[in-house]
Image (cartoon, rainbow, N blue to C red; front, top):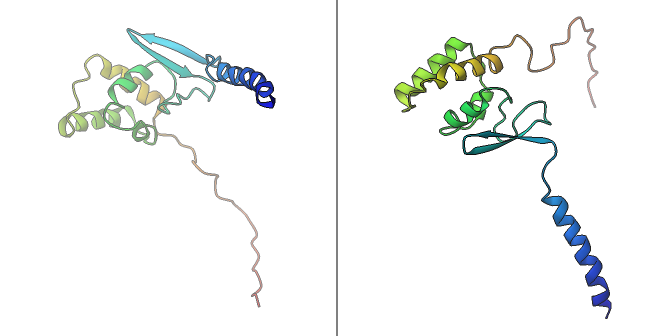
Length: 140
């Protein structure tokens, strides 16, 4: 008898948890490209959680052409000028069997040059300057 009294509230709670777990994400937008639907999470400073790419025009081309062969991290950790990115593409075409990008190539290069160009900033905190250091005494 005690089990049947607990069963109804337990089922109600389980249904509530399932409903909230599978509800549509309100912080995401959907973009349809032909028959392909891409869900973009715009809550993390404009970074696509699936690839780590900056969400901007051209991300669909980056996903289609770049992540088909290698991890997106290979792109996001590298910084280069438009000319160097073009050299990388040519190298991949020559040695890694990358296909001709056609009309997508200038758009991909625009995206890379905009979001993954060299930066003149420190990745870490700048070194401390004009610090007066003291010597520690010898321990026992």
